[in-house]
Structure formats: structure tokens, C-alpha cells
Length: 554
Image (cartoon, rainbow, N blue to C red; front, side, top):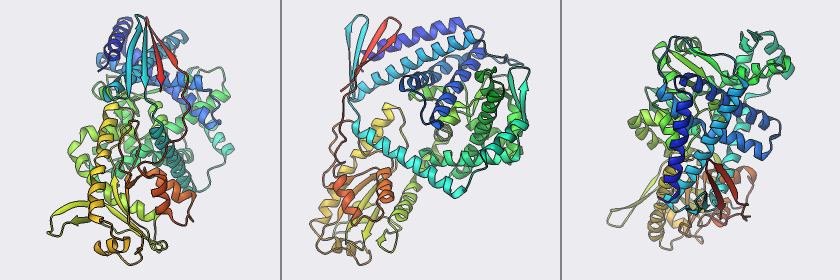
């Protein structure tokens, strides 16, 4: 731990004490306004994304900091809520909204600084006090990680494009707007009221399907893996239904603002609901009555579950926020930011034994994905892994997959890595990094076993069909599902290609007719490949109470 963490912890404690004093006895009102601010920030980001990123970088980052402040703010107030029969829900006062936004911005700035400081534990940052009122944090530039992030974003967009194509043409926008207008009105002069319509429900369910399947978390477990009493695919379907309702509500709110511009969009986004009514909605939508309470619990944020989000430096992603007394808020921000990660985090934390059992099935699905992108008749991918043994029959290591290119004679021996997604957590990131480095041992063992033999001889030894080259050696590949390049100057054995799965998919998608794709992958990603050119950004100073934090990316 460096000097920054205890100083920033003290700043956080001071801010927390101050806001607790300010909102003493009004904790439920505070939570309502926090959720409203989060919904507004996510809504503006969403609208800007749909309008060709009309939001400038500074404004977007300010909204992002407000969202980063949600976890620490809710972690402050949710445990203090005492039940009540009613819910103090009315139009937001502009002055209160501005105060809450400033509070969340301050919490979010502290949250970002605390994450930067936490990187120092893993050799990724260094902190020092320049003077009594100025702290400097220097961080390593994560060029390789950023390249993997960009590849993952490409895969998300490509997946969403393919799902949209399978769904076919969308409904005419003018017709959709006419349905929205015909089934909605303003309630009590400030709030939203709508009846809904079957065609609108289906329209936004289809859109939700695109977004859900585009999330990396949507493939966190095999589709048929049983967890919490249901297949993972069924849990994922719940996210589609919940996000469809979010999109439906956003559409109604946006149309009301168009028709009645004097309204406040902040008042239209967040809706309260009684838990029993939320349960009835799920049952009406087809959820079994015995499961409905469990469905809500897995999609909700409460005083117990918020701590994990704060601890891992994440923005929460709920479809419900429990505000006590049988009342829930229906936030939009969780679904708009990531409609699956909240459920996946809850499943992993609540059903540890089921989760650990289910992840063992990932390898089978990973091999199927390889088959889809390296398909017959040109390629051959066995439907099982292989065990390498010494002459005395003792175990050396396992090969998770192999790819034979009959056209070029190339043969790749592959280790597949499919860890849980680590998100913003430095601790989880370090765990994934160390797990990846263990593949160096695999590379060494397989290289020793190959011992200069040709691809053809290795293919024969593994029981694979003819077609491998007698003049070429096999290549070795380590393919992690998400990230192959981390910031530290880790040693990745140059005898192997280290390439993240999104990069493989992009190569096979954008260059389907490549003459020698296995050779190309090994050449471009040998030992992780070369890094993109890097221009060091300007230093940036974050303003805290009584402390400036100067951040440098080296």
C-alpha cells in the first residue's frame, strides 16, 4: 500500500460523515434522488450515443464521474434506511438535484482516485505528496490492455449487428411514435403515465435481445448450466425482459418530453413500485409464481449487495433498488449501462458451488466457437481436448484444442483460457494476469514434448486426420477469452502466440479468405504481439476538498 490509499480513505470518511449528517432522517429521499441522478446521467449518455456521440469528452466524463459516485453514495445511505409504510416520492426540486449531482461527482472523483491508488498494490502506480495540499499519482500506461478492450468492443458491436440481422427489419419509427403518443399521458402535471402496447413490448424486447447478447457477461456460463435452480439461459432471458421494459419506459419518457417540453426529464425516468406489484408483472410475463420473488432478488440492489460493487470499484447495474417498506425503485441506469453484469455478479456470489461447477463447461463451448470460425472442410477442430503423456505413460499436460488447416498444412495446439470477467477491480485483474502467466509453463511443456517434430507427426500422435505438413512444426497458441495483454512487462513465452478471442474473431471475420490464418495469428501475436504507438496524455488534476490530485499516465 502506498501513501495515497490512507489519505483518500480519510477523505472518503469525511465526505460520508458530512452527507450522513445532512440527510439524517431523510435517507430514503437521498436514495431516490441518487437513483434519479444516475438515471439522468445514463439517459444522457445513451441519447448521445444514439446521436453519433454528440456529447463532448468533458461532459461525458462528468456524467461518468456521477455514475462512479453511485456505489459509494448508495453504500452510505442504503444501510441507514428504516422502513416506512409510504414512500416520499414527488417531483425533484432543482436545488436538491444540483446538490445530489455535486455529491455524486465528489464521491465519483474519490472513487476514481481510490482505484488509481489501489493499483499501487500491484506495481501499476506510484503515489507521493508533492506538498501538503498536492498529491501525485503516476500510473503505467495500459496500451496492451487498451488494445484488447478495443477488440472486445469490436466483438460486441459485431455480435449486436449479427443478432439484429437475424431479427429482420424493425417497425416503422413513425408508427412506433404514434403508438407511444396514443398510450401515454402526463400524470398530475409532472409524472409519467402509460398503458403500454403489445407491439411496443415486442419492439423493445427485440432491441433488448440485441443489447443483452452483445454483453460479454451474456456468455459467462454455458447456456444449459444449472445455477440457482435454473439454466443460465433462462436467467439471461430475464435480463432481456427487464431491459425491454427499460427501453419501453425510456421511449415513453422521450416522447412525453417531445410533446410536453416543459416537463423535467429527471422526473420521468425513475419510477417507484410496490414489491408485490413487481412480482405480479413477472408472473404476468410468464415467470413461475414460485420463482418471481427470486427473480426480483437477483436483479435488485440492497443494503447487503451494494458493498461488493463499491469494493470492486464498479458502477452498480440493478433493475431494482430496495428502499424498504415493501417499496422498490425501477432504475434505468443499470440496464442502460450493462443489462447482464448485475445478474452475473449476484449469481456468482450467491451460488458459489453451482458457479464453480458450471465454469468447467466453458471449455466445450470455447471449442465449438473455434469450430464455427475454423470450419470444415478446410479446417478440422477435434471436439475434445487431448492429453500429452511421456513414453512411460505419465501425464505431461493437456491440450485444450487443436486446429488443422488442410490447405496450408499448419497445425496449432491451443490452450484455452476462460476466466471470469474482472471489470474495474485491480484485485481481480491481478488474479487474471497471474492465471494467464501460468500458461508459460504449458508452452514450455508442450514445446518439450513436440521436440522438433513436424506438424504431421504431431497430428498423427494426437489421432488427428491427414493434412498436416511434414516440413512445418506445429504452432502453439494461448487464447484467453477476454485479455491476453496486461500492463506490466510480463514474460509471455515467444514460442507461442498469445491472442485474445476477440482478435481471433476479428481476423476471421474481416479476412475470411486469408491464405494462412494460423500463420498470420502466430506472426502478429507472437509473445502477445507488438503494441500500438502511444502518445502520452497530458497530466490531469482532480480537485478534492483540501487536496489536488495530479494524475500522470507514463
